[in-house]
Amino acid sequence: MNIKKALLSLIRQFRLQITLCIIGIVAAIAILSWLSHTVRTASVEIVGNDSIDITPQQIQSIKAIGQWEFLAINDEVMVDTVRRGVFSDDHLTRIYYGTLRLGVDMHRTQPGWIEAHGDTIVVTLPPIGLLDDEFIDETRTKSFYESGKWDAKARKDLLAKAYRKMRADCLTPSNIEIAQNNADLQMRNVMKAMGFNNIAIRFSDNTNNNKHNK
Image 1 (cartoon, rainbow, N blue to C red):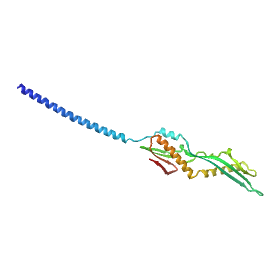
Image 2 (image 1 turned 60 degrees about the vertical axis):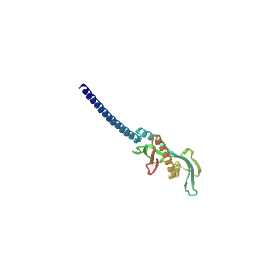
Image 3 (image 1 turned 135 degrees about the horizontal axis):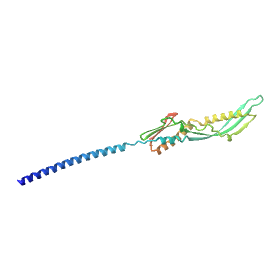
Image 4 (image 1 turned 180 degrees about the vertical axis):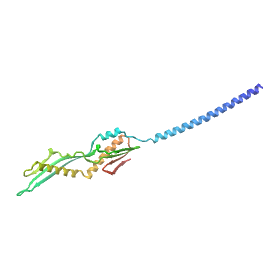
């Protein structure tokens, strides 16, 4: 009788051990499955995060450049004026020298001039223009021919004529395009240094003239 009870006790213990083993195996499978799903999810999130942010401090540092020169043109013009007289005419001919500097004034940027979308950035620069209207060096002005007497007003009018001629000679579409290309290259280098690879550079006076590099 004691032997029978002992056998029954051993059988119950064996069944209990088998049940505990099965429960342990099922729990282990569930834990491994959960860990595998978590690792896959985390991996997808890390790979998909390609966003690059540009901070307000970085934007302000670019604007702080102020006037940014992209093309300097040395020019000289000869202008003259004639004063008709009864017996003879008086002539005044002078040669003027100047340097016209083309670029952008970063203080003229508009709201939203720089926008980042993921790993792409779009920059809209102010229009290319003269950085300084006083581009004639009057100390280098030469009198080429002068007859008769000329007052200060006549000489001032001739200087104004020289300014207009230099502007017309230098502010040409081809020179503006050269300055835009230089601006595009330099701004693109700044953006690449910040980590952007897909860059679009535009100018606020001609937004159809976009330059892309992807």
